Length: 115
Length: 114
Image 1 (tube, rainbow over the protein chains, first blue to last red):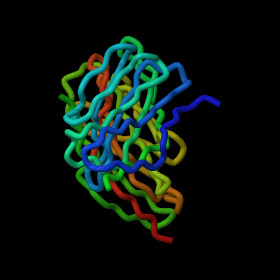
Image 2 (image 1 turned 120 degrees about the vertical axis):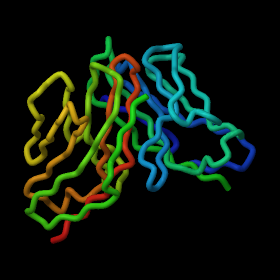
Image 3 (image 1 turned 45 degrees about the vertical axis):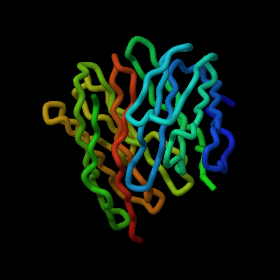
Image 4 (image 1 turned 90 degrees about the horizontal axis):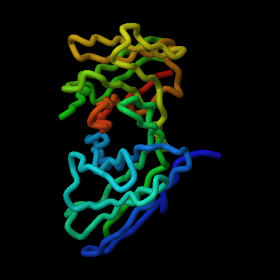
C-alpha cells in the first residue's frame, strides 16, 4: 500500500542531544514537508523540499536541519540548538510539478519529548 | 510570505445542524490552492476539501462545501447536517504554486453536541 511513514511514534531526547526523525514515502511524490504542532499554534512549517537535493526553510527552521538525498526520504534532525523541542512533528508529501499540486498526505506523526 | 488566519479557536454545533468555519489568507501568488483538513483525536490529518484559486465555482464534497471569495481572500467551510464524527480540529491551508510551500492556520476546534 502506498503511503507516508514516520518513525518512531514516540521519541525521548536528553537535553543537549541531537535526534533524527524519519519520514519515508512510496507515493512517488516530489514535494515533502515537515511541520511542528503545538497546542494553539496549528501546524508551523519547519522545512520543505520540492525536489531531491534541494530544500527551503520554513517559518521556524532555527534549530532544525534536513536532507533530501532520495525522493522517498526526508529526515528531520532536531539539534541541541532547538531550545524547546518538545512537540508533535508531522511529515507530509504531495505531488508538485510546475506549481500544480495535489493535496498533501500526512504521516502518523512523531511525539518528541525532552527528558 | 503566505499567511492563513482562522479567527475562531473553538466552535460548537448541534447534531444535524449547519456550521461555518472561517478562514482568511494572504498570498502574493497568482496561482494557489486552498485546503481544509480535519484532525480527529487520533491526530491523523485528513483532507476534507480543496479549491483551486483559478476556479470560480465553489468546491463541494457531500456535506462539506466552501464559500470562496477570491477578492476578499476568504475561504470558509460549511458543514451541513453535522454528525458526531465531525468533531475534530479543522485546519485551513494555502499552497503557493511558485514558492511551493504549504501554510496552515492555527485551527478551529469543532464540538458537536448530541
